[in-house]
Image 1 (cartoon, rainbow, N blue to C red):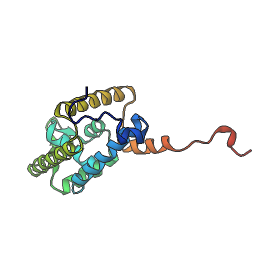
Image 2 (image 1 turned 180 degrees about the horizontal axis):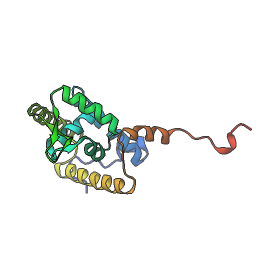
Image 3 (image 1 turned 45 degrees about the vertical axis):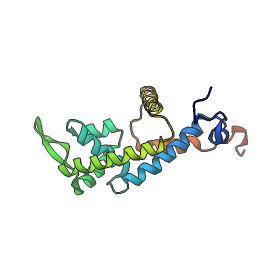
Length: 183
């Protein structure tokens, strides 16, 4: 017996995607990227800048290279991200007390404020995206997605998140059959 408000037909999305999980993930991912990009557009580095700022706020201070490895960001890109975040007054490089030759990345007071406001706006964007789900279903979805992400990361680790889009684009290019090659 359906719950009140629950659809009994497959719905236009399932019909449009033919029940394909990849199609559904793509549509939801696109909606998430659009809404999160609107929130992060003023932050230096956009989503990657947000990842660095969040790590600087939430984690113990780490070196630039450690952050790059942890976040899957190319170390060259990381240098530019931190430069931009530092110019904006959101993070700073501080001498590591254990080894003064190395710097750790630390969020400034302004960085903490910007991160908090950004986090709140991202949560609102997520709630808008997931608004049609019951609160328990939202949490179940989040939990299941993180389980899947952990498993996928264990099997095929993402070392450089900058490479993901290139990998997807390369994998989605049509391949010509071997017998259609010119002789």
